[in-house]
Amino acid sequence: MALSQLSADAVELGRFRHYMQKEIFEQPDALANTLEMAGAAKSVQPGLFGADAEECLRRVDSVLILACGTSYHSGLVARYWLEAIAGIPCTVEIASEYRYRVSVPRAEQLVVAMSQSGETADTLAALRYARELGQNKTLAICNVPESAIVRESLLRFITRAGPEIGVASTKAFTTQLAALFLLTLVLAKLRGRLDAAQENGHLVALRHLPAAVQKVLALEPEIAEWAQGFAGKQHALFLGRGHHYPIALEGALKLKEISYIHAEAYPAGELKHGPLALVDKDMPVIAVAPNDALLEKLKSNLQEVRARGGELYVFADADSEVHAAPGLHVLRLPEHYGPLSPILHVVPLQLLAYHVALVKGTDVDKPRNLAKSVTVE
Ligand code: G6P
Image 1 (tube, rainbow, N blue to C red):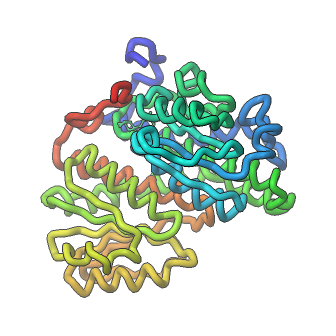
Image 2 (cartoon, rainbow, N blue to C red):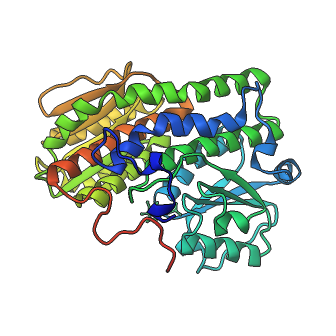
């Protein structure tokens, strides 16, 4: 969308220095607006994904998510949810790869085209290719209702993030995750994997998300302080495990995009298979470490980093039992959030990238060589 077509509210920076910062802070509202579509009911309805959704979703036997960039990372998080909660096999593929490879079509597979803009050339081409292969059960999850990807899909879910102007995607990502969680609940219910109490529990947690994100945003001053330590670095390593591994990927992407620091993300268990060789005092390591089933394993990975003199920055939560020490910085997110924890944990990584870019003085909203919507191959 051209800037001239946007409402005054969207263009007005108000108290913020950049659109990216404003959009990070708009996430509680963007999530609340997106979740409003599910209404106040105690159960989620397939109709959220379009009039014909129930008939279509009832029969799908697997899910294939196609996307690029940040949208690809939301798909990677959803894979954990779809398999664990809905018990449905899920693959996530980069659209530019899928569109050019010979794959085995599955007529009963739900093809999800994830795209903030709905116009990304590779995602649109991947969607068309899937249809050529006879994969007609298609769903667009998108922030722009009139976009090509929405028009060409059978089902749709329009996130209500509002216009996103900063090139680095933030609120579009978290609202995509909210949409994918709703999809997980709908599929879980249709497949008999969710009783009323579990469904209600998930819905209560979803509805509390905007307030929970608001509390995470209050960590901005501490994160801004951490950012000072990154500005002189050439490289950074992000670690996560389980459904926080894609959040580590997204944190690394944000840092690369706007601060031009080379950043990589690894599932922490892979550390010993290569990246550990890189760790020294010049390589800050950022770990996403909420108190979940994998925390103990992650802590031993963090020990390996400390033993090699790496400076560690850990995003824990209230009960993670990781304590600050020399070379080990810890920030605690106020709440532990179960399956929805990735939505909270990406927020401090967005803020970290933003503040590192501020310290470095880069063009935050329009990073060099990048475009908001990549409509050509
Ligand atoms: C560009 C943007 C990214 C975005 C990606 C996919 O690279 O800079 O922020 O994640 O395209 O865009 P989409 O609109 O399909 O989500």
